[in-house]
Image (cartoon, rainbow, N blue to C red; front, side):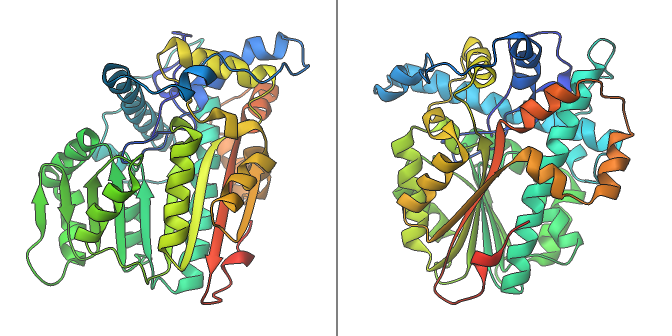
Length: 391
């Protein structure tokens, strides 16, 4: 979850987070584009040399937050959910990828007008790479396990992956989503009130009656839970109430979530996952290379919107991202920036989406993509070959 708005109010409504993110809550994932998009122009004109990594919010992130301050920080993070959803729906409407379900969670963004078009295009291409990159790894895990597994989407927001996997006959044994209770309540309301969302859940359900209240929904194949990812004991308790099976191969997905948690909080979450599941994979999408001038501008723009990246010190490099995973119980870890991911995607489709709208800010696009990454880690006591998963 997470958001990626910048102080630049000229950005298009979909320029919000081309690479979203969300923290602690029960999760989230969104945060990218707008921030970098707004920062981009200035970043290119700034001196290219890196400055000492001392983001203004670093000290504050280490200090205990007051209850009022924590609520304010969480509210800023929750706001990124809407930004990311609007951007995704716009990208889908233009034709970047297919998602027939996003329309039931978010209203269509208003048509963009010049001079916002280029930055809207920038956001869409960044989201395209993110959606396809994460999806590639998820499907690789499902293939290795023959779908005899479970997925836990941390900070899922308005994500539609459950419905899309069902359409492709790729549902795992059970699919869990976790997010802030407020966001979960909104998602459940949409599911209950819109048959195209509720029908697939009922079709895949078997056994006793489906359980549902304002902050949780539990069927035999899909569960959504309101929880705070900063407290792994509470998270585990709620997931087990919804029949989480620690003995099943488990895929955990976090998109722009860990970066909104303090390094200690994200370490605790990673340790919990590594120690709980004997066979597991963790996919993390978030910022990287944040010590240079471009990264500093991204941080400053978010701060102006009261959205601090509490865990940004881990986003120094691809090495620091890998190291965090290995230090917290994972056996193997890899990380690549999104420009490299983009180069690995099917080039015929890349050429198709590049022709959808004109983008003249190629340099800015590359800079932005080099400041986001996908990391994935595994532990594999059953020797399923999870360590061999790669692009």
